[in-house]
Length: 385
Image 1 (cartoon, helix red, strand yellow):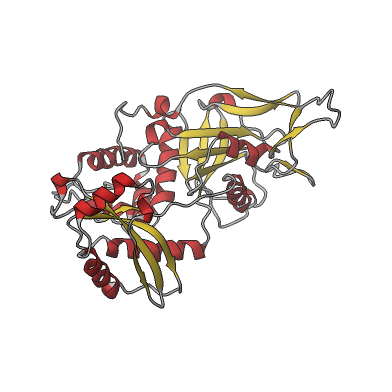
Image 2 (tube, one colour):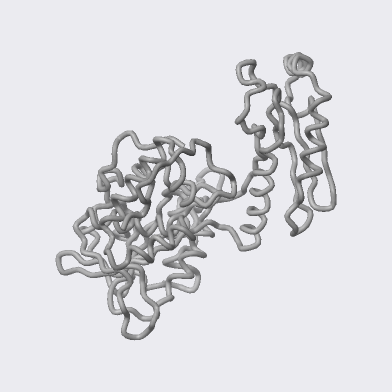
């Protein structure tokens, strides 16, 4: 069985906002998508045959989580681990994702994708993405549309027939040369033009961006040129901790070490500071009130996954692997691996070829090892989304 079957593909269009990732990869004929299919098919061929059908079904419905599991399987397989899928436990019908073994050492590995999005947020984004796809059907031969503001006012999917008709009628009122001249004299593009539409379900405003002469009037070019941007305060550490909490005690008391792998792919980009704060506790700066001797010190708050104000936590978890992996950065995806200093069952981290952080004499130390690209041995020229 293949994850993506061999067939003739002719679709060169970019993905729609509401596209299922598997469906898009399966139908698209762009060379970079073909490269994705080839790599994933190669990895899929290493997955146990009796588990392939179930994983393929999950790829079709839950692409991100299935990709994460296939990625982990290939990552540890290339490090020489033997891998059992969904090992049975004596005390529960629930099964971890993997049981890994190497040189007499065994540990369970559980995968979890962290997006930081609630079901309510996912529903809102689904309606918004569907609206974006409809807006990209607007006929706008001379201008790209920048979305200045957008608000979905109800839980109902907005109808776009009247919206598209209104915008197309408004576009006829604007001359390209006039707008270009006004842009030259102005510093704020968004304030030059305003096409506004509001009904009971949606409130949206656009500004106009003249297309270059070479593409004016060409068909097949999507009209939305700029989407709204959003700002965030803070990082992804709370989302990571929430995901870890859901997995920490899922299988009760285990008889072997337990490693949780979180792929953090929310809208707030995860970095090393977020990962460290989630595991070790938020970084704090302490200093004296004496202006002549501030005595500045850096320390960690007791709000981490391993330790908080109640004391040592989650000793049933032997370690945590946090990644920021997607289709576009697989070969150089960032990761952070942590060893629980007070785990009930320790993992011999020397058997794992990934860099990791641990505690030595009350100090956080990092042991440098290999990067993901060194282990997966992917082509240097991957893909550029």
